[in-house]
Length: 101
Image 1 (tube, rainbow, N blue to C red):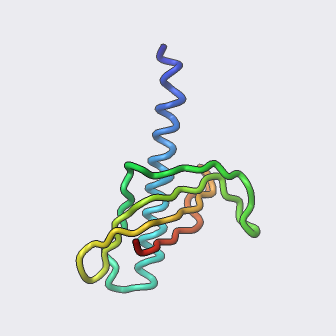
Image 2 (image 1 turned 90 degrees about the vertical axis):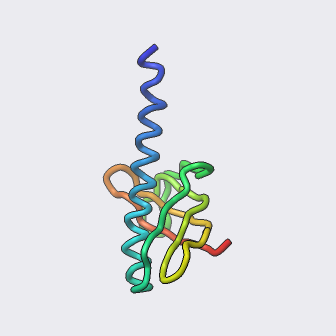
């Protein structure tokens, strides 16, 4: 029984790691674009995870994450939609984009 639960626990851990990678890349990217940037936080509930395993241009992408997040710069946090292309365990997030809702 313990072995049956292991893949699910591993999948949850790798998804959480992937989403953290997306948040880290977003923080660097958005701070570079807007010095007033304060926070980008992905809403874990409702995140969709699409396995991709192909190249986008010359960059390998293993997973596409998309869903809702909070983006905060100078004012109050705003709900946004996001997309994150993730390169896999050794690569991390390679692209993050946020769209207003």
